[in-house]
Every structure is written in structure tokens, then in C-alpha cells.
Length: 448
Ligand code: AMP
Ligand code: GLY
Figure 1: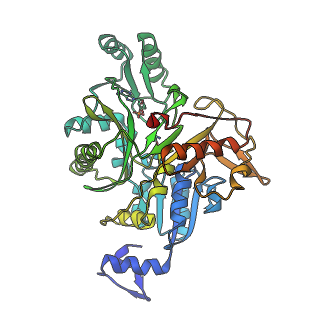
Figure 2: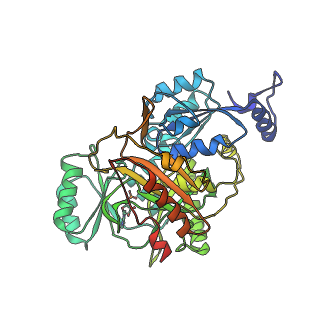
Figure 3: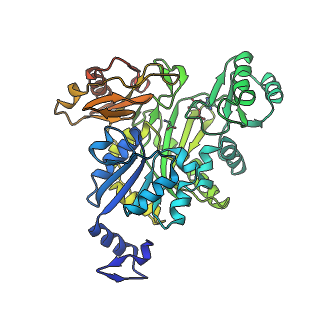
């Protein structure tokens, strides 16, 4: 149903003002479908459930935590046709896409072709995440600060290039690899092994490799709601990508996050907005792939200024779990407005907040699932400054079980970061499960 042909009191109106439409549809109350089943989607469901404009939330496939706010739908986030059929049948007014894979499969294009309202970028725009090369070429063409790079498909050529460059060097598989397609090689031998994985053994699929200069400095995630050239910043977050304390171990999807960030000044944030996020949104419009949804800048504050490490075409996970609780505005209005191509208004709180991910032992490598989790120690306390987001859980015969690599994100708030961290850690310790591990140093660098 197109917004301009919304039925008001049974009469079809063809040229009504946007505000009237919102008012009318609000009275009607909305059915919303969230696609995805991790902590990010739990935080989205949580925020949407606070909106008076939403009557029913579905989530596909969801998880045991999301089931408290939404009706779970047994469809994979990659089952585009199944999701489309479901959305039509249930008369979904708005679909919100969490993960990158359905976006890169073109779910937004398919829903829109079928007249459905959906929040997220189309397939062409989602390339900013699904192709490292697309993102790098765009940044170079539009003068957006990032590390110098070359692209290779041939193993020997790639290896020769690495041998000529200083170490460490950064090797990035040119496609989606769930945060595992990036290798920082300290030695030629490590680089050779990684290049073999990516270009000879096609470990992530057939593809190319982007080799880029190594940058140094603290990283931060700057997510913005974007609607063509209009960019609406969110509050900042810092993720912790490495698996273990002291930033050691393999890269993961993210082991914890916090905000606000003491090392990013207001001037830095303005610089990043004006010189990175806004020009990127503009560049996408110029290139004929206008972006709509959440543009995530993975940025690094180097001694030569703030530079882009990566772009994502969606909310970050676990960043969303500590960003959305600080949103004061109604998230439904934001999703709806962006999906309709309208201007929006957003207000944020910026209280200290910190979250710790509890992951299955072995993650990001092989891990087992099906272990029982006992969260009663946290849920039985009446504290409002701790929240447990489910990332990979399921419920069977009344028991809560692990079902993914990252399992829970335990978030604490406080009057300062120290207190937020203490709250989160205390809660983590009350969660009982024999197969989980977590980092104890999330946010510690911010406290020094
Ligand atoms: P990406 O998937 O591109 O975000 O890369 C994953 C992680 O690898 C980043 O969060 C950084 O910690 C690290 N990384 C990526 N590119 C670079 C670079 N050019 N220099 C230093 N570290 C990098
Ligand atoms: N936490 C990093 C990401 O969502 O890509």
C-alpha cells in the first residue's frame, strides 16, 4: 500500500500531507516485522516495543529474549521469498532489516517491488559493506580519508606486493565474512597463509583481496540514519573486536561496547560527520545508489586524522545494544520516516553505558551449543540499570539454551562509565552457564 493512497475513514486520499498520514496510520497502529535474531534485533525490538504506534511486532527468526516482545517467525533471515510472503499475509506495515546478508541479497528491492515499506538500503547501496573494493573505490574517488590500498585476485601478485610493503599489513577478503575476513599479518609467512586461504583455497568463497596500509589509533563506531544526502548522527560507541582481554586473540563480531567515548572530542565528531559520513552519503547519491537506512562508519583516530576502516550498511552488533537505549525519540517514527524518504528529528541521551558479550567457548572458531543458561540471578533483582540482550539463545522445554557464537550482551548503566562497567560485570557474574566466556576489560582504556 502506498503512503499516498492510505485510507482515511474509509475514503481514499491521493494528496494528503505527510503529517496527516502519520497521524492517521498511528491511530491504526502498526504491524512491524524485524528481520534477524541477534542482540541487535533484541535492542531494536526493545526500542520498538516502547512506541505507542506499534501494535504487533514479529521477528524472523528472533531468539528466546526477543520472544518476550515479539512473536517469533520460523523463517531464516536469508529466506527472502518466505519473508515476503509472510509480510504480505500478515499485512506488515513496516519491515526493519537487521543483518547484512538479507540486504546484500536484495531484500529491500524485492519488498519495495511488491509495494511493501521496508527500512534498509537496497542491494546496490548495501555494496558499501558487501564489497570492500566498492567502498574503497568510492572513498578514493570522493576524497574520503582511508588507508591506501590495492586489489588482487592473483595469489603470487598479492604476495609480491606484500613483500614490498612494510609490516604489519592488512589483508581483507572482498566480501561478507562475518568479521572474520580481515587478517593483520605481522610476518610474510602469516600473510602468505592468509592469502592462500582467501585466493587459493577460497575459504570465504571465490573472491578478491584488498591489501591496505596498516593504521594505528583507537577505533570507534559512528552510526548515522541516512536518507539520500540527509544524515542524522547517532551517539558514538566503541566496540572491542578481539576475542580476549588486552585486545588479543582473533577478530570477532564484537565482544563488548560502551559510550560515550572520552577520546573522541566534539570537534572529532563534527569532523567525521562533515568529512566522512555526509560526503559518503552524498557520494552514494552521485553514484546512483542512494543510501537509505543505517550507515555505519568504522573509524580510527590516527595521528594523521580520523580515517575510515570500514563501512557497514546496517546497525552494528553489539553497538546497537548500547546506542538505542540512549535514543529519546520514538524509533518507529525514525524507521517509518526514513523508509518513506521523509526528513526526521532525533533526540539522544548520552548517559554512560557499557555492555559485555558472553560468548560460547571456542568462538569465533568452532563452538558447541545447547548449554543451559540460568539468568535468574540477574532477572530476580529489581535493578533498572542492567539489561540482558539475547544474541544467540533458544528456549526448549522451558529451559534457556545457548544457540550461537555470541550468546548474551549484558548492559549496565551508571552515573559514570566505571559504575556502568561495575554493574555489567556484577550481572555477568550472576549468569550461570558452563560454556560461556567474556572479556573482563571492556571499556577499561576509557577509564585510564
Ligand atoms: P574491518 O572488518 O574492515 O572492520 O576490519 C576488522 C578489524 O581489523 C578492524 O576493526 C581493525 O581493528 C582492523 N583493521 C582493519 N583495517 C585496518 C587497517 N588498515 N589498519 C589497522 N587495523 C585495521
Ligand atoms: N560490531 C561490528 C559490526 O557490527 O560490524
